Image (cartoon, rainbow, N blue to C red; front, side, top):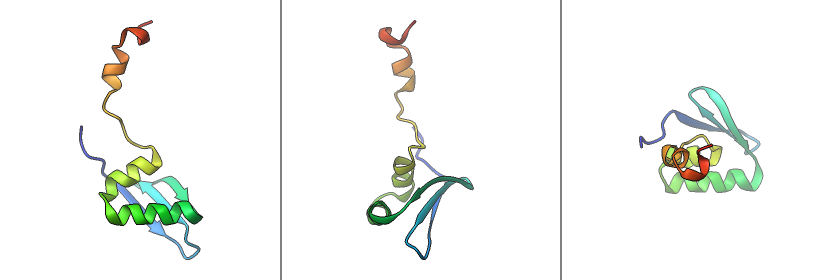
Length: 73
């Protein structure tokens, strides 16, 4: 599975963090969530962290789940 890419974030004067993916807004964080996000971005892979926080990523198991007998209807 390829690594996530195309994410950027901006921090505004009121400590709001806006995450964008390829130029489109993907999420806005405020307060404690914004602080936790910034701490995690600094300590890890920024692209992966932003993908996880926005939910804009694939898990890699979609094909496996689709072929599971429970999901074949």
